[in-house]
Amino acid sequence: MEQTEFQSVSIDTFFDKEELEQNAIQTGIIILTPHQKFLVKQLLDALHKNAPERVDGLEDRLRDVEQLAKAIANFPSLLERSQLTSSVRTQEALVDSLISYPEDGDTLLHMPSKAILGKGFLVAKTHTFYSMSKLARLYTKLDEKAIREYDDETVSMMFTLMAEDVYLTLIREKTLPLELRKQFAFSLLILWEHRSDQTINDVAPTLRSIWEARRTLAPAFGTMMGTSELLLISIQLDDTWAAFIKARLGDEDVTQAMEEFLFGLSHEQIVKLRSILTGQGIKSIGRDEVSKYLGERVKTDISLDYRDFYLLYTVRRDNARARQRLHLPGPKRTIEDHFFLFVTELEQEKQKKDHFAQ
Image (cartoon, rainbow, N blue to C red; front, side, top):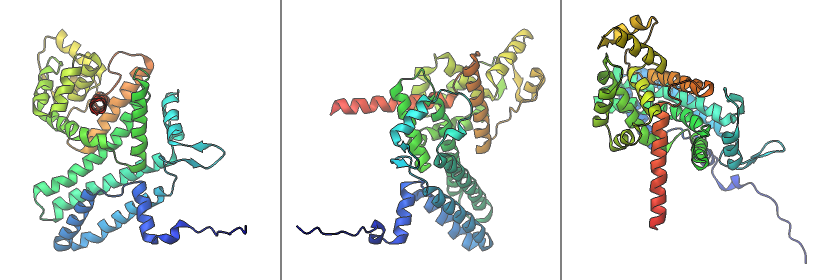
């Protein structure tokens, strides 16, 4: 029988080039969500009417962010099989490497290039939306509710940056069940691939509410126990947070991590200050007196700036990791670590119940 010869044809010929580029972006980094696209259009329309001289600058910045995303999208997907050298990289292999890597320290050079570059993209996007919130407030006639949406998006992106750190911490936590650590690792891969995370959508509003409530609920450094502040916060927040407090408040690590969050001090500073106040019979001091009693400069003022939230989180994160590594007393996880873990375990239980119900 005569053999028929087939000529290989690129699949690209069946699709419009522009459509292919859009699909490539959609399978990788999410440049803008539908809601973010709406916010961009809303702001540009408002600027065209009220401050047309500001339009070009914003459009240039948005194009820069888009070009950055397109460049990163050219790197191999972290969710698909790829081979650059003799070794084959798969999703499962990446998860195993994240779980099994035994060393402490900065793992920057052990991370996929797409993960590192994607973090830079998210930072650039966060700064862009922060600038958009300022433009909306200064140069448009949008109402306060509309302007707050730009702030909300900015803060949500900051929490996505934070989620990456939380996942890395919990993945390395060898006291957690292997199944749970693998789930965190897969969640991290999805975050790296898309620079978006579903869990943070559930967690971020609560954490932001705590941060904002902390401004008024921890104004005095009295016994340094934080119990009354903690209860007041729990009353104001959602059912998930109330369930978390009810279930985990008896855990000393959770209590100590919450105190660090509430007072803006390290565990070591809290212990020292509590001892000083008790020894001198002092029941209460103000924020501005903390530095004097500790004998060191301490930033105890409460800012609602998302950058300060992330900065202080990283301080607590690094302190917790140091205590873990050096076997020192004090919280070994941040309150964010504990809350992420609790929410994930709740979701696992729900999935198991749904499975058995079928």
